[in-house]
Length: 295
Image (cartoon, rainbow, N blue to C red; front, side, top):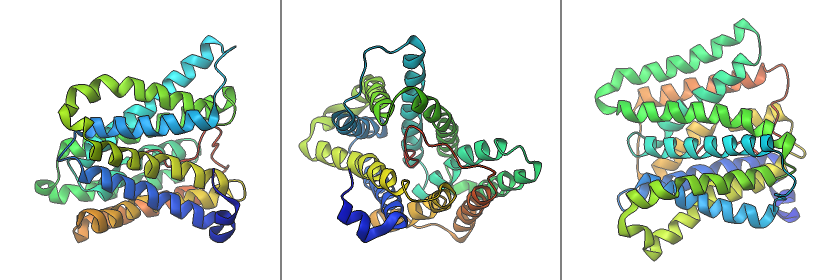
């Protein structure tokens, strides 16, 4: 999925950073189109693009599956759809960087709970303090947008758990491909009901496909190759910069600037995520897919 010359040129760290940048630029481009198409319809276009590409690459084996195999992958698909739908709803209401920072509370809490060490709760408290800082500017912050970001974070935590379970039952990218198809199917009716006629505009379809490539296909490819030689702890630390990357992408693509307090809130979440990653007692299991699905 990613060429050997590219891997040699960038190295594993460079590939992860390219994946992170690709995700956040894709999110910023998607948000820039919300005036023409609903966030729900944009999520659907993204999911359809990634589902088609992943299904073509993986060609998943569907025969001989148990009822539990399908139950797990259905839950995986539901978490994928919910995660993307909720974060796009959040994007439409609050700045991109803040939405991603708040969303990080979900997987961060999951990581700390899995550590079984009380002192690691300090990382959740630090991230929570960052989110609480946003309360100082409530007049500028849509609380529904914050709630959607928290829902996306909860769905991301569920996605992580179900990713591992799916990876044990579905080989390679089979589970992710099937889950992506199920997520796209599940979002079809809501997308059609909210999109209007603009959904079928050629320009909108092309940008939606571009968002799918930037936000899903390219990051999957980069991370899949990088994780073959990159320690999980290093990967986790690199992933921790996503909120800051999202804020920077929003500045460049959307001219969306943050206040000093909002940057401080993002810094708290990034520091908490790095701290939780460094103190993790064991590598995070990534059986079904790499980790930048959420935005």
